[in-house]
Length: 378
Ligand SMILES: Cc1ncc(COP(=O)(O)O)c(C=O)c1O
Image (cartoon, rainbow, N blue to C red):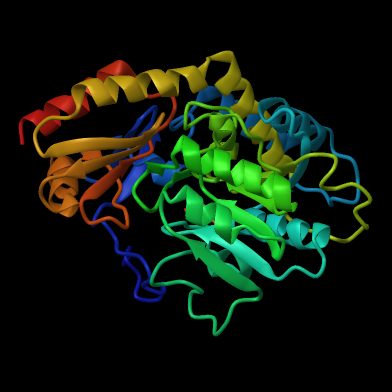
């Protein structure tokens, strides 16, 4: 069988690897080689691979109820809503969808509903929010709009780390500001406290809706339950995705009662979002994150990475928790390839001199030591 089928539309820059299984933080290729997966299956393997609780949950739910419509009450969905609300308190209103882009699409829709007549959305330089129409419009790179001819609303891009300019751009025509507290694709770069504070203050003063896109940095990965709240403010809406169901497709819009007060039926909707398989996993994943203090663990491991991995080709380390950007003194791709040859998978970024780590939150100190050793010997 041709595994790299010509029939599959070739939109990915494949790594030349065939992965057949995974266990913990490690994946195994078809030729028997194993890799420490610091790429985390694109940040989705929040608890690593073959996690016993997730496998048990999936098997149990598959036997109980594989699918049901959102028109009926499903106990596992109710449990997942509670679990997400508990993680994101005081934001406790939840709408489940299937992907990060879809979560952002719906968050923007909520913002325009709240601010009728306003036409602008402020985005940050370097931000990535997904590939559907509204999300792509907010994605700030050369692929912006992903081949669509125009945006559905006016988009204003704020430059990186210029709080005064950001403050000026958020005016009373702005329906929403969407930003990643730690920009993922841009190279795991965290917004400064000053930017977060300005965002919070200007949104409050102008009634613009602050959407914190935590699809990549959320769920404790950044070392905070809500990454946008790291500087003391509170976003109006948080979007979550990636590892929320441990690798099963799922994402969520999380907000407050105020934002969804009097929301007409049918404002949002989805066929598969909030399905029993995904939401059973959401509850199990969040239980594990909280019971095992994985949020604090992510912050601690970040410190270990800072303290021990600025070696070999690494000249600087950025990001937060276990969303880490490593700045290299040679093209990052060369280091990515060398690490792969050394049995370690990491991810690239939009910055040619930064590669990304977004490993399972179950990563250990020994894994960090393995990375430090591999970098040192380059
Ligand atoms: C911050 C952020 N937002 C949104 C998305 C889009 O998520 P999805 O690919 O699940 O639609 C991504 C995906 O990488 C992301 O990193």
